Amino acid sequence: MALKDLLLTEFDHEVGTTRKLLERLPEAQLGWKPHEKWMTLGGLASHLSNIPNWAGPLLNESSFDFAGAPPSRDAKAPRAALLEAFATSTRQARAWLDKSDTEYQALSTLKRSGQVIFSVPRISAFRSFILNHLIHHRGQLSVYLRMNNVPVPSIYGPSADEG
Image (cartoon, rainbow, N blue to C red):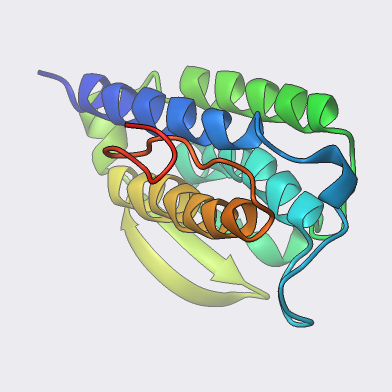
């Protein structure tokens, strides 16, 4: 089986699960945040919607400096706009995943303000900075939803709200 096929299976699963949480965003609470140092609910949702966009540079360029990426932390867009942004970014990221095994083994370097954070094969960069990053912030979103009494969907198994 090609690396692309393995990644697409994982990507589709994680995207579908993330979409379930984004669909439950409470419109009236998008400006809410549980702590002064944390993102707002809308900002976190906006960040989740944007993460797949970073797949392009990681998969198609030899390096990506995310210091130049536009911030998305304070967005308070309506849920429908956030879902559309997520659909657009995931559709594009899925297209960028059309690579050969050799292309997945080429190095990708992630930088922040010129400083190298890591330099790894593209497949590792994608899994770490896209998939794991998405999973991490989706976990935060599930806590935000719980704290706002929004039923949390099943993610990897039953939740307290869904069996």
